[in-house]
Amino acid sequence: MAGAAGPGSGSGAAGGDGDDSLYPIAVLIDELRNEDVQLRLNSIKKLSTIALALGVERTRTELLPFLTDTIYDEDEVLLALAEQLGNFTGLVGGPDFAHCLLDSVRLLAVEACVSIAQLLTQDDLETLVMPTLRQAAEDKSWRVRYMVADKFSELQKAVGPKITLNDLIPAFQNLLKDCEAEVRAAAAHKVKELCENLPTEGRETIIMNQILPYIKELVSDTNQHVKSALASVIMGLSTILGKENTIEHLLPLFLAQLKDECPEVRLNIISNLDCVNEVIGIRQLSQSLLPAIVELAEDAKWRVRLAIIEYMPLLAGQLGVEFFDEKLNSLCMAWLVDHVYAIREAATNNLMKLVQKFGTEWAQNTIVPKVLVMANDPNYLHRMTTLFCINALSEACGQEITTKQMLPIVLKMAGDQVANVRFNVAKSLQKIGPILDTDALQGEVKLVLQKLGQDEDMDVKYFAQEAISVLALA
Image (cartoon, rainbow, N blue to C red; front, side):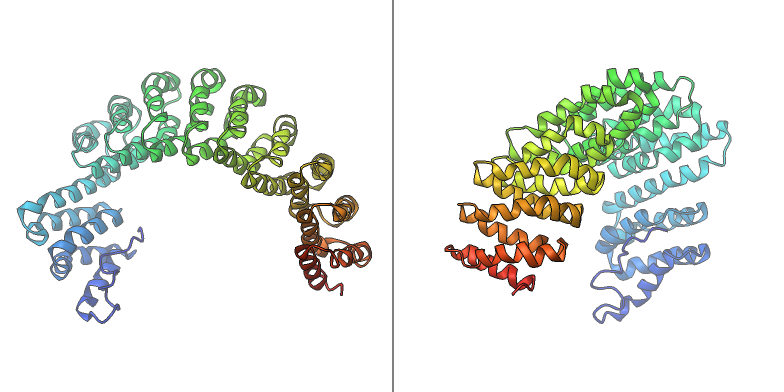
């Protein structure tokens, strides 16, 4: 049973601020959630009592949605609920509000179809279940259509391949182009499952001719939730359709989604690159999707660059270290000298995550040397970025690399002519101090901090003295 909050769980609920009259209501609502079928049946038979206590408005706005959202149940319970709701007209405010009940009953009818369909022969399905399902798929209430979309995979398995081809696929096409975004999103989520569950024989033709044209429309949907729902499953079609179809028909869609303005759409595509890689291979992937990623990484809008940086560790994990070094490493280093501070900061954090993913040996050979070269950059902002990178990388790289490779550069930068660089040296020494070996800390580090503690610049002096204090070097 789903654990949705019931109408008795708000401020007027039993056990709330003294409204004892609602206590029996809370008990009945707890029984509606109980695992014991008989208890649920008993509670459903007392629904009119709950409705009377809540009043017509709360019955309409709280009790009915609670019932239809919470009760995914045995046929016996659904039937008892439908019977009760049939006598609810007066309890929701009379005939003018009877449509609320019809929505609830039709929602329950979709649930019942899933349960009943599994028990019937094909002939009985056609005469007993399909008329209800056809009506539900075209119902005037979007909630009913949403329920059909949400239950589509279960319906497909229950009715079997013949009815799926004749009835469910046309219904699915309509749901994919429904006027309500919630319905389109629910249907989009089911695209991969629908395709997977089709009979293997003829599956490719059905998808290419009857499903793909609708998917192409959804890629440029006006609603970001619809596009995001599709992006979360569309990559999975590549394993079903194979290499040629993926390259010819799916890659252009992936490219469009990779450039979508909605971050969640882009993330869903990047998160699932591995399943496309399995089908078409890394070489083809690099020729098709990678240029789009590079283009985004160099976009004139800094927020677009920032979004791609945030996906980079994920992308690195999908593509592997060799491919990353060949195609993306230079991008990551270029971001460190971006003219926007937020990009430089994100690029620094990105390096730390990459080291955590690829290991210290990779960092020592590939990243650290490039970072340390920046210490000699004529632009003092880039020299400061070296220090920020050392701060971020030291923990991931460990004591040996930090002491032998990074520390000498930090100490050398203590003589920088720009005060901002010098006080960042003091801050860096405070940060990496606990990682360094004791000899280095008590020797060179202590001497440099003492010297900076006598600096003519007040900020340099302050941060040096703070580092001496924190590292207990006084």
